[in-house]
Image 1: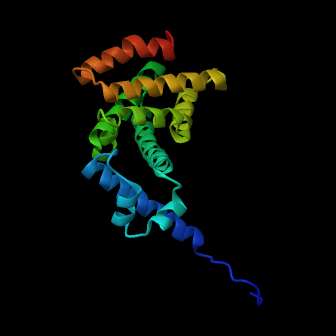
Image 2: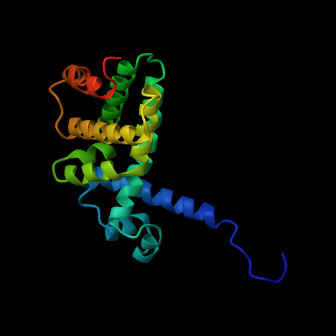
Image 3: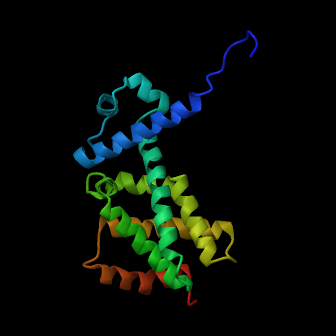
Length: 194
């Protein structure tokens, strides 16, 4: 390299490590204290950095929560994809996807903390605007509805996310009841008679 300014060739890796560490610690705090109780000051203290450093990565709590939702959705999306892989029929794929997503959130203490009464409204709003959740849902629906246009898929995706959030915030009496509700009311709307 000539005598000019040196580039920081590890900057991207350090930034990735920092954001991963911040989201990992935030996840721990969600489990310990609940999502609503996590503050940027408390998170900075738990991470071991200054608030100024934390704000370099996330402009505020809303951006932090959105980043966490996107990361969790991507991880959960991989579980859903694996669960529906063996299903042949669109209706079966849809039910397997929804039940896997719901079970995945319920079995994860950090994710289930998002669906307690004091946080459910904020969680619903984040779920409905999350680019990762929309992308995962649209891609899934494209697989079971290959002839649908993109606008239609996006509308169906938003409605399906609302169904999932509804099951998380107001669970059925049993897994069997929830599956029956999905088969009776969700499948006909999303995939029709096929």
